[in-house]
Image (cartoon, rainbow, N blue to C red; front, side):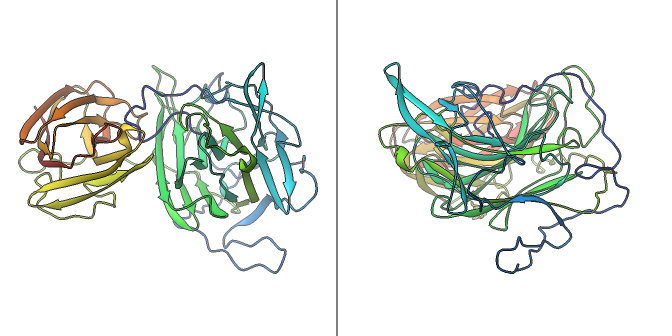
Length: 475
């Protein structure tokens, strides 16, 4: 479950507290493994497995996999041979408001579905919230496999459903995030149009995240992850959302543990409906707690006969600059490229932001209909900028607007804990084109995936912005 807000221009200001009490000594990985035993055969998957049509009432088979365990929630009571009801006090993590209880009011089965329900009450004259959280720790842990979950997210500000995985022995590699975390799905109740898939690891904290657009409260959607020794892949409704094969873990000041640590140990599945916290914000009068229900239709865990654990960490590729030294591709906006893909420029709308971007006349024109609730609600980015420790870099560009307004520029680390290489810098632009220049020295470890960001959300103005002649170069 999210420890901090990925994609956030204010991520460092809202970084949240450790979600699990990982601590203790480190360990070494074995050469080959399955969920519970070692194996020797070499099997490696590169694409989502095909599901065969089952007979009525049967769990579907997946080519290349065996069903390890599942829960269809068809009974009248929770199967406690699989699930633990986790108890937590309010504020346990992420500044969340809910108390996780073992009450049947918060955790129950209905019509073949598991329901985790958030309930608003009053305590000591103040609003008080309870909710449900389940985990399979010490009951259904496994190493490597495919997890498939069908779930429907609830609507409502401050509601935060999640399905995620944590290591069985949380002290094996040390305190979070060194122990690792795999988030299969997260959706924010105030913005059901986006689902998140995320991996957390490392010290310092690093993460990688994928998102998919849709309507994740309109019905049940299938979320899955394929976890293998050298690669982890996420899917939503059979659409690939994220592929990760480069991660690490280490104790501060020590060498990294052998790859693929920390994702080479038994993990368990957990599901919860949080209320409030640093990422979604707190509920308001619009939140209907009569409908605050996170519904799960099934959880299915599959596993191959064996996995090849003889894997090596891929080498990092650092993008070369253009002939003129510019690390920004299409910085002169000569090419009318696709602004929805992950190549070169990408235009992003999040958290209530609404607008459009168009490349024409050697500039990008960004029009805003709604500024949203965050700086990054309206955002133009270019990733894969090579940032080398000790180098000084210069960011330059031309910009103007239909009328004076503010904008934020930054160079960030989307796969290295969202640290800022160039701090979030707010500046004013006018109706006359001006050149803006920002220098910064890279002080963090080398990163092949720095990201230039222009953030135009939550600024009080919807004036159209024009940007051209963008450069990032070493000086």
